[in-house]
Length: 241
Image (cartoon, rainbow, N blue to C red; front, side):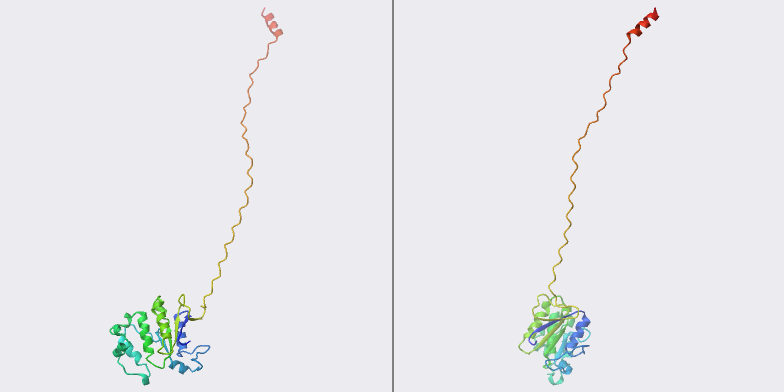
């Protein structure tokens, strides 16, 4: 794993911080073990590792000046390796003249990460760096991912670099591990085809059109007066005489 960057995805800031502390021997895992090479000594792991920018653990306070931050971190270097360089001289030597008079809160996330890594590596015994949630400061992985890759691959020191993140960046092809419920994303199964709609039943054949039969009014026959009877006419005449 040395010479490469390992990304570890874990849900929740508390879980990521606990994992970063466990990987550097600063917290005992509830199960399993952490070993540096073939040596499972926690003391040795802690001596040779450093955790960077861990919330509520060693995240730099924003109200500090850069010089004050450098002074505090250099004071943590074991006495036998401390060169007693003043913070200003150390910053100049490391090429950070542009941030000499800045506050920590003024630094971009990438510049702060680089500064913290260099301060950790001021201890020559450190060869394992664990960065706690570098993606919490920015959604742009370009602010931290290329730097950590270059740091791991650098020829100056044989380093193992681990970044515990909330989400593995898209397109990452390097080493990766997944902790907790979030597992390595799998190829999604194709969505089921929508159910076919039932074919409509054929309509019944329409009834043949019925021809309209015009109403016929019955013809009225003229009333026929009864014909007079000749005999009756004569009787009437006789009575008249």
